[in-house]
Length: 367
Image 1 (cartoon, rainbow, N blue to C red):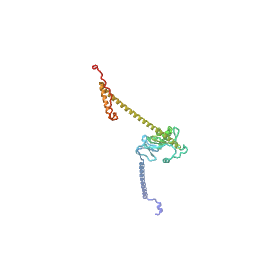
Image 2 (cartoon, helix red, strand yellow):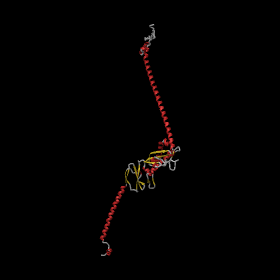
Image 3 (cartoon, helix red, strand yellow):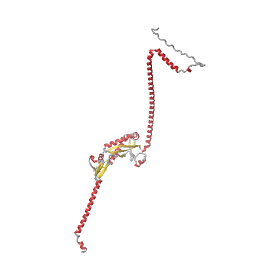
Image 4 (cartoon, helix red, strand yellow):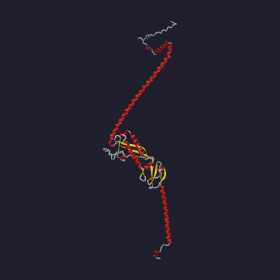
């Protein structure tokens, strides 16, 4: 048979069945591989949907930007959870106990983080430039620089979610909370500075001004329903750089004045304390003398009271007894060489003129 004849006649049926069978087997193998791959992909997608929420945070599942769940069920607590893969679902974590910090953007002069870390300042120039330098105006119409750092934490995540959801798909971004707190800090700083004098803000009542700013920020956060709690406000205020030397002189004069007042007060306290001690000593001495004199008088009174019956019973005998007692005490203390002597050494005769005994009263029975 020639080649032309072979081309004109088809393949035998046996050859066609073998080819179809091989193709079918290849397709079946391919389908098995595809099924296995699809099953593995499903497993991977399912496993990738698991996520963990920490004990100090809450989580919200946004499906095409819309929070899933109603009310309290919207917030996912600590533990293992599952969601569809991105971009269908997006998991937003909300730190409910982590302290967040934000700085005010008004009231401070233009500087850079590098300058602040290095402790340097930009040149002050001849005057303040309001286009680039921030400032606040005090109650006594002075200009100073002031900045507040607010520390806060999210207390009500649901309020924060609905408060800062925007657009038709309710896009939620945690940065909206930070921006709202920052705006409240700016408002509080400017409004509070307008109620305090410059001396109180810089030196006289620093903590009072800081507490007032804290109270104002808390009131704004509560009034605007931000869903946050203001934990702390740290306020730092400085005079304008262009007037730093003048403010330094005023501060030095105020310190000297305070030192003089303190010294005078200390001297006053010392004098008053010394005078009080002297007065107390005099009073105590007088009280002791009064007590002693009263005791002496009371003792003498008791002695005379005891002797009065004896005197009344026999006055002459009492006088003789008391005189003898007195003379014995007097003569006991007299030394021999105390008596006067002649030039030859012989003692001088000493005679005492003593009154005679008083006559006894005559009675009617013995005239």
